[in-house]
Amino acid sequence: PPDQFIGKKVTDVLPANLASLTIEHIQRALETREPQTYEYSLTTKIGRENYNEARMAVNGDNEVVVFVRDITARTIRTRQNEKYAAQLETLRNTGLKISSQLDLQEALQTIAKEATYIAKGVSGGVHLLNKKKNLLEWTTSTGDISVSQGSVIAYGEGIAGRVWETEDIFLIKNHVRWGNHLKTSDDHAFETVVGVPIKWHDDFLGVLIVEQSPPHFFS
Image (cartoon, rainbow, N blue to C red; front, side, top):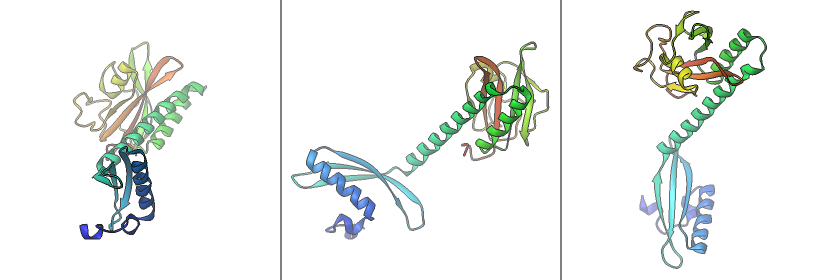
């Protein structure tokens, strides 16, 4: 309510750290005569963290006007995206570890387990490229994955086939409803599935798959 703020000092109505931040920007605005923008968070009475953006402009010789907007949804979304991007990069780096292993089957099993653990997935595994047959074969699995050993996928089919085609990370947030999902070898019953290319030096070797139930973002 306005009567809790009008006529009072910043230090009387704001937490100490936010009051200090606000005073700092007020002084900077008055000294430079330039607009100031900063972000801050406040914890509500029910323990929820709210994020706000304050935009400050000089109004007269010794006065500033501040406009505040709620950016909670944007901040949470940005942090989720950053976390998600970091996890995908971790999966990519995990896939590259295969180049340092001598025993291929052991390396694949290690990578599948490590990637699933890092991404907090429920299951995972590897489709290995059979160059003679020009098919991806399901070789290694961990967790509650439902793919049968030796199942094959053609170039461009399903998630693994799409990763093979693009040699890039491919994520499906709702795999069951994805129009290109297979009803055979990669018909997983999980919401979120990510495929990561595995390369031995510069050669495409196969696809690492990690599956997770809701929420959609790996966390």
